[in-house]
Image (cartoon, rainbow, N blue to C red; front, side, top):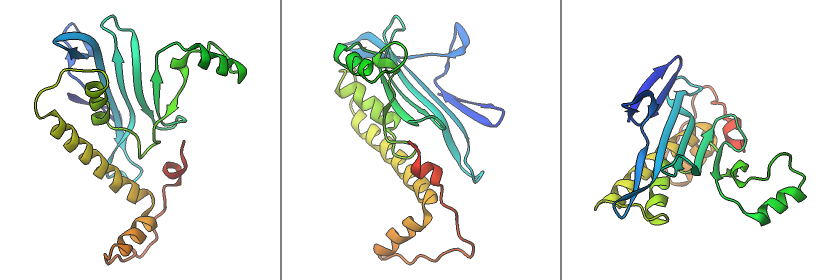
Length: 200
């Protein structure tokens, strides 16, 4: 993984493909020692509204066939509704019929749907996607993977809890007081981040 600074943003992605330095090298998904798919990972970050913390502005975990045809994508786009969403590249006549009945414009392609996945704070993390690849798609693994994935997931969730506490400081203080912690309010009230709390 490498991190590049670009203007006021930071991009985190796998190392570049040697043949094409501008393109991130995909990670092979190996099942029974054969490459059956490729995984692309991208995080684009910026400083949060306080200017003190790095915040994810866009992330994409994309699974492609070896021929580069998309299979599933888990994407997060700050400012898009729903912010966190799945794309499933599949055909299903029954769902197409429902989309037609709902008078949706354009091709009735399942991959065009944005299936909500927890919004800004409660979205799945990379470790969730990796566990999905291993448990549901049979990706090869090495001993100890479960502990590494669980540890990474815990780090992610603890970070999100801290961020959610900054979004709703009074709720965080109320919860801590209920647990027996002594919490003192700051001299000036801290504004809630209603955009994060209410976003789709």
